[in-house]
Length: 270
Image (tube, rainbow, N blue to C red; front, top):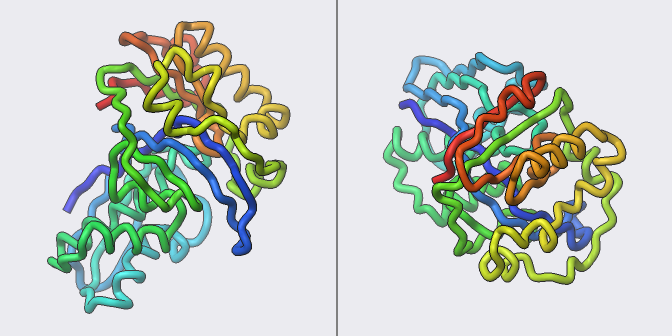
């Protein structure tokens, strides 16, 4: 079974407090983007996991696809499968590609083995894999709170808008991103900003709290964001904990030559 795990962008990201479990309480707007990996899972004699495309650091046993299989295997009598992941979404970019791969593995296994796991239960399983994984079970605009796994529908559509994603050769570990963050009350309500204010005002009302500490460490990220604005973006931001930045444009625009030394993706949003 072949599926196409997408990525996401964050429309604002507020870090509100430090939790007793070591995580942080956040509020963010998740929006799915049709830049994808390719995930192929088929029944097999023995379990296997293989990756092509971009190199994924770390041991295979720690990959979210492998962890997703073993998570379900604890509760169901799963037969072995062969998993092949073609990795296209850049790693360490704040786009959630790894989380999507784990969530889509859960989704695929549910179908392949007719497990009849409800969407609500799938969200619970996904949240055990990682904070962003639950969003990719829903895969539609959502407000994420708690660690990001507490989801509620977001009444925002960017359908027809043109998205440009640019990523420098920088990988930012989540631990690095959180190390310098000081949680605070954001003041403005994220949902209110996204649902009741035009996108032309988002630049002044939405914040990604990681930018304050990561821009001084990685000035190229801020420079790329400012360039997107200079080239006409209605709204631009760092996605998640970086290092990718994105710009939303009213119309299609070919900026590949402007960013030819960087990882570049563009396309219309659904």
